Length: 118
Image (cartoon, rainbow, N blue to C red; front, side, top):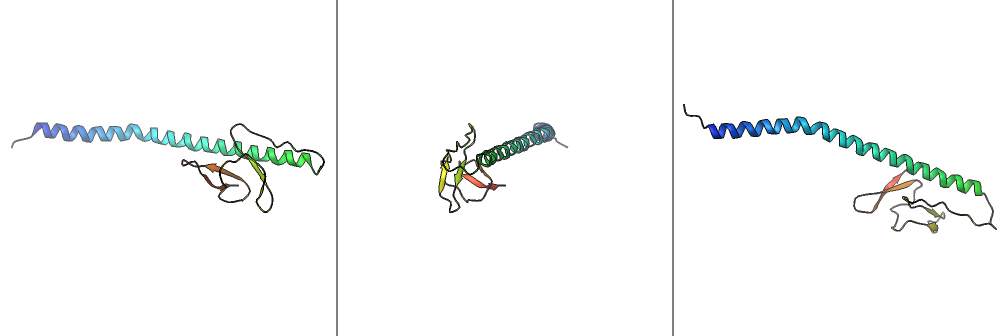
């Protein structure tokens, strides 16, 4: 019986390398996925905080037509105030909104805004 030692070594080297790589890279993938999800949750909480800050500032201002309302600005978020017919009163948002639902929009990888998150 003739055994091809080179082929045998290459075959099992490849198999063991793939198995060890899978065993070592699986936890890394799970950790990276966990960190990405955690970062998205933190960003969502931050956006909800900004949203409530804007609403609270508008409620504190009340109905004073003779005074000027100073719309809160944030360094890493753009916000806007729209009329009921969706005409902007004040906006920092440079791109068109996909819909005019209340809440906030997240920017996807293409740079466009996704569906609102309430």
